[in-house]
Image (cartoon, rainbow, N blue to C red):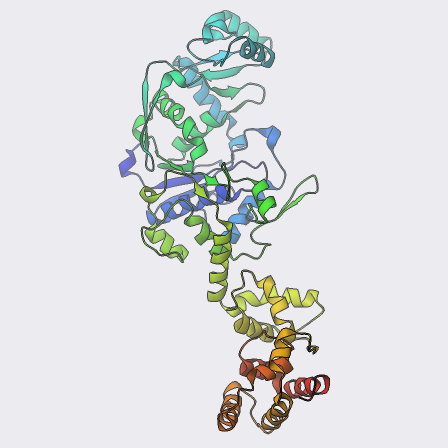
Length: 508
């Protein structure tokens, strides 16, 4: 096999199907995607399901659907195919057994029969107990029992685990692309469990090393929480004789609470009112967790927001498309410290992307809201309203309805409204009657013909009739440019509303 520097970049995202995908996991997948695309490499989707007790039905499809919505594309893996499968760890039992046997035969691992009760008793008896070079000879394992007794116990059907034998006194170097050279003494490591006979499956540590090697992974980009396991993984690569093809590590900074200290959690989202999952999640217990998609975020906004949590391009640029992110992404510019999850900034990103999005993309969301209110309109008219109103600094399309209901529902009029009281003053009624006559005389009722006729009249008379006109068409102080609004309503509805206002409001 070729050395790492000669190999095509291959990275992986390997979630466990134990529930909804946390937004921190989405960021990890995104960074892997950006890195792979920038280097012309491949992104692998692998499922880590070796812990069958934590499997949650529907979680795998939820994860895949999340990435489809976000536009993060995989090149091979579960549901994508490829030449390095199977990509689901539960389907790789026989592969792992081979490598467990290799470590046992080489004396780099041993079999242990200690029961949970025995281990708990040892932890109670020995402060800070760790199964390692200082304690392993006090335990029930193949090192203390011998080969014959070990074989007898296995033949009798006793459950066991396989532990990695960590020799003390070795300085381990983890070459991290973000954190530099991380040095750890092997003395602080315990003899991790690599395999369990109970379910004939490996633990995370063995499965990931074997899979990354066989799938020719060149870079492991993962969360900071996995940094403590990196020294053990380095030792495992050496034990297998794979040091020359060991991947480069990059441990990403944690996503932190928006306020206070600690990692971002679902409780923070519940407390402050923002999602921590990409899609809405329906738990088996009937609970429903909010998602970015269902909350009204655009996927491009979520991607842009997440990309800048823990990394920046080295400039003041904030609005970056996926292609721009791919071009600029650099692991060396990732922060070593955690990134506060500024959900308010995430809303700002969504507002910016709404303003830049095609009206046709946004219109179906508003159309669904209208239909829930019993209003059916041609989609072209819904698009027109979106185009006039999306620049109103809304964070979500659902915020449009209270701002644009007057497009579809005739207003009511009241002098209790502050805007009406301020603008329906002396001369307003007379101006509106004159304006109605001017508008009624137009053969073409588009924006430009209205503007020419009304602007000329207003200039000649030295008046500003637009706020009183807004009272007539809207009933309060909101809405788009008056000419655009009148053109949308059409001549008949515009004149009808103007007459309704004149009938309802004082003839000042």
